[in-house]
Length: 322
Image 1 (spheres, one colour):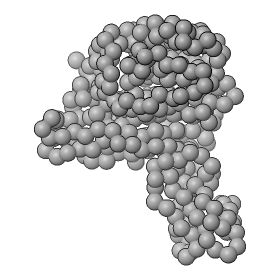
Image 2 (cartoon, helix red, strand yellow):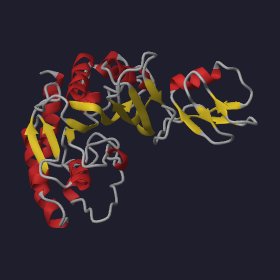
Image 3 (cartoon, helix red, strand yellow):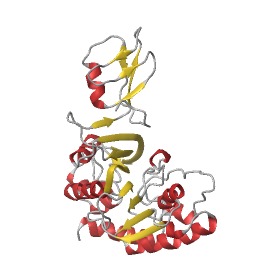
Image 4 (cartoon, one colour):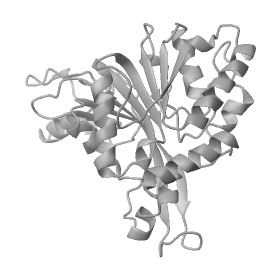
Protein backbone atom coordinates (compact mmCIF):
# COMPACT_ATOMS: atom_id res chain seq x y z
CA UNK A 1 0.00 0.00 0.00
CA UNK A 2 1.39 3.43 -0.95
CA UNK A 3 1.54 6.33 1.47
CA UNK A 4 -1.23 8.07 -0.49
CA UNK A 5 -3.49 5.03 -0.10
CA UNK A 6 -2.82 5.07 3.64
CA UNK A 7 -3.74 8.76 3.75
CA UNK A 8 -6.91 8.08 1.75
CA UNK A 9 -7.99 5.40 4.22
CA UNK A 10 -7.26 7.56 7.28
CA UNK A 11 -9.47 10.36 5.98
CA UNK A 12 -12.16 7.99 4.75
CA UNK A 13 -12.45 6.77 8.34
CA UNK A 14 -12.40 10.36 9.62
CA UNK A 15 -15.27 11.25 7.26
CA UNK A 16 -17.40 8.31 8.32
CA UNK A 17 -16.66 8.76 12.05
CA UNK A 18 -15.58 12.31 12.97
CA UNK A 19 -12.43 12.24 15.09
CA UNK A 20 -11.93 15.50 17.00
CA UNK A 21 -8.27 16.52 16.87
CA UNK A 22 -7.40 13.55 14.64
CA UNK A 23 -4.17 14.93 13.27
CA UNK A 24 -4.00 18.55 14.19
CA UNK A 25 -4.48 21.20 16.83
CA UNK A 26 -7.91 22.54 17.61
CA UNK A 27 -8.05 26.17 16.49
CA UNK A 28 -10.38 28.95 17.59
CA UNK A 29 -13.34 29.28 15.24
CA UNK A 30 -13.66 32.64 13.52
CA UNK A 31 -16.36 34.72 15.25
CA UNK A 32 -17.83 36.79 12.43
CA UNK A 33 -21.15 38.66 12.40
CA UNK A 34 -23.94 36.33 11.31
CA UNK A 35 -21.66 33.31 10.84
CA UNK A 36 -22.51 30.17 12.80
CA UNK A 37 -20.37 27.04 12.38
CA UNK A 38 -22.27 23.75 12.80
CA UNK A 39 -20.84 21.60 15.56
CA UNK A 40 -20.17 18.73 13.15
CA UNK A 41 -17.97 21.03 11.05
CA UNK A 42 -15.95 21.95 14.12
CA UNK A 43 -15.54 18.28 15.01
CA UNK A 44 -14.25 17.62 11.47
CA UNK A 45 -11.81 20.54 11.46
CA UNK A 46 -8.69 18.58 10.48
CA UNK A 47 -6.43 21.60 9.99
CA UNK A 48 -3.41 22.97 11.86
CA UNK A 49 -4.15 26.69 11.53
CA UNK A 50 -6.41 28.97 9.49
CA UNK A 51 -6.31 29.89 5.83
CA UNK A 52 -9.15 32.41 6.14
CA UNK A 53 -7.81 35.98 6.20
CA UNK A 54 -10.16 38.89 5.51
CA UNK A 55 -7.52 40.91 3.64
CA UNK A 56 -7.20 38.12 1.04
CA UNK A 57 -10.93 37.99 0.42
CA UNK A 58 -11.99 41.43 -0.80
CA UNK A 59 -13.86 42.10 -4.06
CA UNK A 60 -15.58 38.71 -4.30
CA UNK A 61 -12.59 36.55 -5.26
CA UNK A 62 -12.99 33.19 -6.98
CA UNK A 63 -11.72 30.71 -4.39
CA UNK A 64 -10.39 27.15 -4.36
CA UNK A 65 -9.95 24.97 -1.30
CA UNK A 66 -8.16 21.61 -1.62
CA UNK A 67 -8.82 18.90 0.98
CA UNK A 68 -12.31 19.86 2.14
CA UNK A 69 -12.45 18.23 5.58
CA UNK A 70 -15.85 18.86 7.11
CA UNK A 71 -16.35 22.03 5.06
CA UNK A 72 -15.71 24.58 7.82
CA UNK A 73 -13.20 26.72 5.95
CA UNK A 74 -15.28 26.46 2.77
CA UNK A 75 -18.19 27.95 4.72
CA UNK A 76 -15.93 30.68 6.11
CA UNK A 77 -14.67 31.50 2.61
CA UNK A 78 -18.24 31.60 1.26
CA UNK A 79 -19.06 34.16 3.95
CA UNK A 80 -16.85 36.64 2.10
CA UNK A 81 -18.14 35.77 -1.38
CA UNK A 82 -21.83 34.77 -1.25
CA UNK A 83 -22.07 34.00 -4.94
CA UNK A 84 -23.15 30.84 -6.73
CA UNK A 85 -20.07 28.65 -7.31
CA UNK A 86 -17.88 31.33 -5.74
CA UNK A 87 -15.94 28.67 -3.83
CA UNK A 88 -14.67 25.36 -5.24
CA UNK A 89 -13.81 22.51 -2.89
CA UNK A 90 -11.71 19.61 -4.17
CA UNK A 91 -11.09 16.30 -2.43
CA UNK A 92 -10.03 12.83 -3.51
CA UNK A 93 -12.02 11.06 -0.76
CA UNK A 94 -15.65 10.41 -1.77
CA UNK A 95 -16.75 10.00 1.83
CA UNK A 96 -15.31 13.40 2.79
CA UNK A 97 -17.11 15.09 -0.09
CA UNK A 98 -20.39 13.46 0.94
CA UNK A 99 -19.90 14.44 4.58
CA UNK A 100 -19.30 18.06 3.52
CA UNK A 101 -22.47 18.08 1.41
CA UNK A 102 -24.48 16.98 4.45
CA UNK A 103 -22.74 19.54 6.64
CA UNK A 104 -23.65 22.35 4.26
CA UNK A 105 -27.32 21.46 4.72
CA UNK A 106 -26.83 22.04 8.46
CA UNK A 107 -24.99 25.29 7.71
CA UNK A 108 -27.97 26.53 5.69
CA UNK A 109 -30.25 26.00 8.69
CA UNK A 110 -27.98 28.08 10.96
CA UNK A 111 -27.03 30.83 8.49
CA UNK A 112 -29.85 32.62 6.63
CA UNK A 113 -27.33 34.20 4.23
CA UNK A 114 -25.76 30.88 3.17
CA UNK A 115 -26.88 28.74 0.25
CA UNK A 116 -25.15 25.43 -0.45
CA UNK A 117 -24.80 26.40 -4.13
CA UNK A 118 -22.23 28.98 -3.03
CA UNK A 119 -19.84 26.01 -2.80
CA UNK A 120 -19.07 23.61 -5.66
CA UNK A 121 -17.59 20.29 -4.53
CA UNK A 122 -15.47 18.36 -7.01
CA UNK A 123 -13.81 14.96 -6.88
CA UNK A 124 -10.18 15.52 -7.70
CA UNK A 125 -6.55 15.07 -6.79
CA UNK A 126 -4.25 17.85 -5.55
CA UNK A 127 -1.68 16.56 -8.05
CA UNK A 128 -4.07 17.09 -10.99
CA UNK A 129 -6.66 19.72 -10.07
CA UNK A 130 -9.95 19.75 -12.04
CA UNK A 131 -9.69 23.53 -12.44
CA UNK A 132 -8.73 25.66 -15.49
CA UNK A 133 -5.47 27.61 -15.76
CA UNK A 134 -5.39 31.17 -14.38
CA UNK A 135 -8.95 31.00 -13.01
CA UNK A 136 -8.57 31.35 -9.22
CA UNK A 137 -7.94 34.45 -7.10
CA UNK A 138 -7.32 32.72 -3.77
CA UNK A 139 -6.38 29.05 -3.33
CA UNK A 140 -5.97 27.39 0.04
CA UNK A 141 -4.97 24.15 1.73
CA UNK A 142 -4.76 23.32 5.41
CA UNK A 143 -2.52 20.54 6.70
CA UNK A 144 -2.47 18.71 3.36
CA UNK A 145 0.79 19.50 1.60
CA UNK A 146 2.92 18.25 4.49
CA UNK A 147 1.56 14.78 3.75
CA UNK A 148 3.19 14.66 0.31
CA UNK A 149 6.66 13.35 -0.32
CA UNK A 150 9.05 15.63 -2.19
CA UNK A 151 8.18 14.93 -5.83
CA UNK A 152 4.44 14.90 -5.16
CA UNK A 153 4.74 18.11 -3.14
CA UNK A 154 6.39 19.81 -6.12
CA UNK A 155 3.49 18.66 -8.32
CA UNK A 156 0.87 19.88 -5.84
CA UNK A 157 2.47 23.33 -5.58
CA UNK A 158 2.86 23.54 -9.36
CA UNK A 159 -0.85 22.75 -9.76
CA UNK A 160 -1.80 25.55 -7.38
CA UNK A 161 0.48 27.93 -9.29
CA UNK A 162 -1.12 26.85 -12.58
CA UNK A 163 -4.72 27.55 -11.54
CA UNK A 164 -4.03 30.92 -9.90
CA UNK A 165 -4.52 34.17 -11.76
CA UNK A 166 -1.53 36.56 -11.95
CA UNK A 167 -1.08 38.08 -8.47
CA UNK A 168 -3.39 35.43 -7.04
CA UNK A 169 -2.43 33.95 -3.72
CA UNK A 170 -2.02 30.48 -2.25
CA UNK A 171 -2.79 30.51 1.48
CA UNK A 172 -1.59 27.53 3.51
CA UNK A 173 -1.16 26.09 6.96
CA UNK A 174 1.22 23.17 7.52
CA UNK A 175 3.36 21.61 10.25
CA UNK A 176 7.10 22.31 10.07
CA UNK A 177 10.10 20.93 11.92
CA UNK A 178 13.63 22.29 12.18
CA UNK A 179 15.10 19.06 13.59
CA UNK A 180 16.13 16.10 11.43
CA UNK A 181 13.80 13.08 11.51
CA UNK A 182 15.08 9.53 11.22
CA UNK A 183 14.03 7.18 8.43
CA UNK A 184 11.72 5.22 10.73
CA UNK A 185 9.60 8.33 11.24
CA UNK A 186 9.86 9.59 7.67
CA UNK A 187 8.81 6.21 6.26
CA UNK A 188 5.88 5.69 8.63
CA UNK A 189 2.97 6.25 6.27
CA UNK A 190 0.37 6.60 9.02
CA UNK A 191 2.42 9.26 10.82
CA UNK A 192 2.71 11.10 7.52
CA UNK A 193 -1.08 10.88 7.05
CA UNK A 194 -1.50 12.25 10.58
CA UNK A 195 0.49 15.38 9.63
CA UNK A 196 3.59 14.56 11.66
CA UNK A 197 6.44 12.88 9.82
CA UNK A 198 6.14 14.92 6.62
CA UNK A 199 7.00 18.19 8.39
CA UNK A 200 9.78 20.14 6.62
CA UNK A 201 12.11 22.90 7.85
CA UNK A 202 10.67 26.33 7.04
CA UNK A 203 13.50 27.26 4.66
CA UNK A 204 12.96 24.07 2.64
CA UNK A 205 9.20 24.62 2.61
CA UNK A 206 9.63 28.20 1.35
CA UNK A 207 12.15 27.12 -1.31
CA UNK A 208 9.59 24.68 -2.71
CA UNK A 209 7.25 27.64 -3.22
CA UNK A 210 9.79 29.98 -4.77
CA UNK A 211 11.13 27.21 -7.03
CA UNK A 212 7.57 26.91 -8.38
CA UNK A 213 7.68 30.59 -9.36
CA UNK A 214 5.94 32.42 -6.51
CA UNK A 215 7.66 35.83 -6.32
CA UNK A 216 6.39 36.88 -2.88
CA UNK A 217 6.16 34.77 0.27
CA UNK A 218 4.55 35.92 3.53
CA UNK A 219 5.02 33.92 6.72
CA UNK A 220 2.04 35.05 8.74
CA UNK A 221 2.21 32.90 11.86
CA UNK A 222 4.42 30.31 13.53
CA UNK A 223 2.94 28.37 16.44
CA UNK A 224 3.72 25.38 18.68
CA UNK A 225 2.10 22.22 17.34
CA UNK A 226 3.25 18.79 18.57
CA UNK A 227 6.06 16.92 20.33
CA UNK A 228 7.25 13.47 19.28
CA UNK A 229 8.63 11.96 22.48
CA UNK A 230 10.89 8.86 22.56
CA UNK A 231 8.51 6.90 24.79
CA UNK A 232 5.74 7.17 22.17
CA UNK A 233 7.57 7.33 18.84
CA UNK A 234 10.55 5.69 17.09
CA UNK A 235 13.02 8.41 18.03
CA UNK A 236 15.80 8.63 20.60
CA UNK A 237 15.33 12.38 21.09
CA UNK A 238 12.40 14.70 21.58
CA UNK A 239 11.26 16.31 18.32
CA UNK A 240 9.40 19.63 18.41
CA UNK A 241 6.99 20.44 15.57
CA UNK A 242 5.47 23.84 14.81
CA UNK A 243 2.72 24.93 12.43
CA UNK A 244 3.05 27.91 10.12
CA UNK A 245 0.59 29.95 8.12
CA UNK A 246 1.98 31.14 4.79
CA UNK A 247 0.77 33.05 1.75
CA UNK A 248 2.56 32.52 -1.57
CA UNK A 249 1.66 35.20 -4.10
CA UNK A 250 1.89 34.68 -7.87
CA UNK A 251 3.85 37.87 -8.43
CA UNK A 252 6.52 37.99 -11.14
CA UNK A 253 9.85 36.73 -9.83
CA UNK A 254 12.14 39.75 -9.20
CA UNK A 255 15.51 39.67 -10.95
CA UNK A 256 17.27 39.56 -7.57
CA UNK A 257 15.11 36.72 -6.24
CA UNK A 258 11.86 36.38 -4.32
CA UNK A 259 10.62 38.73 -1.61
CA UNK A 260 10.29 36.61 1.53
CA UNK A 261 8.70 38.21 4.59
CA UNK A 262 9.56 36.50 7.88
CA UNK A 263 8.49 39.27 10.23
CA UNK A 264 11.63 41.40 10.19
CA UNK A 265 11.26 45.14 10.78
CA UNK A 266 13.56 48.10 10.23
CA UNK A 267 13.43 51.12 12.55
CA UNK A 268 15.38 54.25 11.63
CA UNK A 269 16.43 56.61 14.43
CA UNK A 270 18.55 59.17 12.56
CA UNK A 271 17.89 62.87 12.21
CA UNK A 272 16.44 63.07 8.69
CA UNK A 273 14.28 60.63 6.70
CA UNK A 274 16.39 57.85 5.18
CA UNK A 275 15.94 57.18 1.47
CA UNK A 276 17.48 54.16 -0.23
CA UNK A 277 18.09 55.49 -3.73
CA UNK A 278 18.70 52.02 -5.20
CA UNK A 279 15.46 50.41 -4.01
CA UNK A 280 13.30 53.42 -3.22
CA UNK A 281 12.72 52.44 0.40
CA UNK A 282 11.95 55.34 2.73
CA UNK A 283 12.49 55.01 6.47
CA UNK A 284 10.82 57.65 8.61
CA UNK A 285 12.21 58.43 12.04
CA UNK A 286 11.13 55.81 14.59
CA UNK A 287 8.44 54.42 12.28
CA UNK A 288 8.78 50.63 11.93
CA UNK A 289 8.73 49.24 8.39
CA UNK A 290 8.20 45.55 7.70
CA UNK A 291 10.98 44.36 5.42
CA UNK A 292 11.67 41.25 3.38
CA UNK A 293 14.85 39.21 3.75
CA UNK A 294 16.49 40.93 0.78
CA UNK A 295 15.86 44.41 2.16
CA UNK A 296 17.07 43.35 5.60
CA UNK A 297 20.35 42.13 4.09
CA UNK A 298 20.75 45.27 1.97
CA UNK A 299 20.19 47.61 4.92
CA UNK A 300 22.50 45.59 7.15
CA UNK A 301 25.26 45.84 4.53
CA UNK A 302 25.23 49.65 4.90
CA UNK A 303 26.70 49.26 8.41
CA UNK A 304 24.78 52.28 9.67
CA UNK A 305 24.47 52.94 13.38
CA UNK A 306 21.04 54.57 13.05
CA UNK A 307 19.02 51.65 11.60
CA UNK A 308 17.78 48.82 13.81
CA UNK A 309 16.78 45.55 12.13
CA UNK A 310 14.78 43.10 14.22
CA UNK A 311 15.13 39.35 14.13
CA UNK A 312 12.48 37.33 12.30
CA UNK A 313 9.27 37.14 14.32
CA UNK A 314 7.59 34.81 11.80
CA UNK A 315 4.52 36.99 11.94
CA UNK A 316 3.69 39.26 9.01
CA UNK A 317 0.40 41.04 8.36
CA UNK A 318 1.19 43.21 5.36
CA UNK A 319 2.35 46.77 4.81
CA UNK A 320 5.87 45.76 3.90
CA UNK A 321 8.67 47.28 1.87
CA UNK A 322 7.92 45.64 -1.48
